[in-house]
Image 1 (cartoon, rainbow, N blue to C red):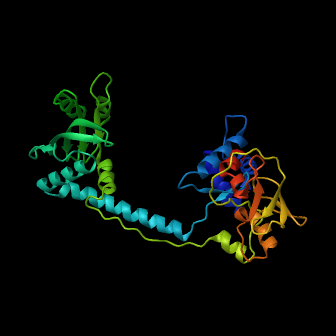
Image 2 (image 1 turned 90 degrees about the vertical axis):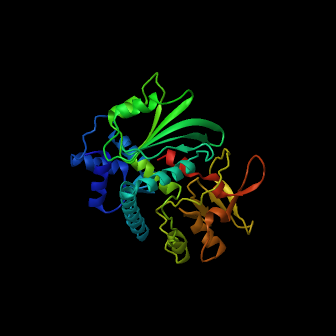
Image 3 (image 1 turned 30 degrees about the vertical axis):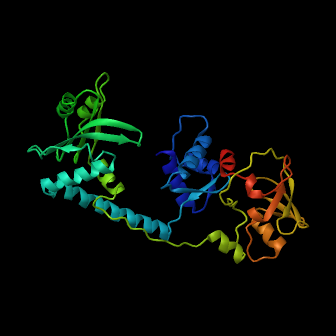
Length: 342
């Protein structure tokens, strides 16, 4: 079992976030992992941290060094439903490419080539061949800067394209002409190797999945629908009704971070009332106000202001030691700095 699968199993058993060293010890004691290195704890922490940055991660960071499992939400279910619908659409689109009449397929490919940058005035399309192929020649405008003479062969096949087809396309190229093969199927290993053979003119290969993505990307034969999904701002509501979990360090809103050398603690003051002062202990937002230590700047800001809700990262301000200008404390904290210390 790999480190991530082991961590997932441990966290499911425990039902709460754990420090990565604790996860490692439990995984070792249950013989879920058999690390070869001397620092399995560091490896576990690194693997978990990197995985939390991925789009479909199973893990979340609860606080510094602590990891838990991502809880499924209605938003996750909606995303999965959308992915299922899109998967069905791609499958149906693929079938349509194979079933549509030859002349309509030719017109579709013409639309696709124009969409990816071929100059309409230069495109020449031959008649549809009996072998399921279309030959196209034209000028491809790359990024609106470079114009490339290109010869395109399109194969509406179910069988994979083999190396001889690649060689035939290369042999038909004129001087300073690039070759492109587009297929509704795929390419054999031999064809892929032949296309990038050293010392020969490279041939660009576009397989069936890439054709589908290009059609979808350029809106050819498909409609794109956008729907707005609302979700609760848990942190905002938690502060409003007084249920902030101060044991978890919450990240501030995204912002530009000042490059400034700060030695903590530093004096801070309320933005709307300079006479209200406190001390910021670190970049994680721990604050001392009226002799009480707060793990969240929002908690301290709410007590200092008397408001029902307060974004402490923008409520508290500090004085830049070099310029003398005042800035919100969120300018001192970047998520990357905390991540590097995990």
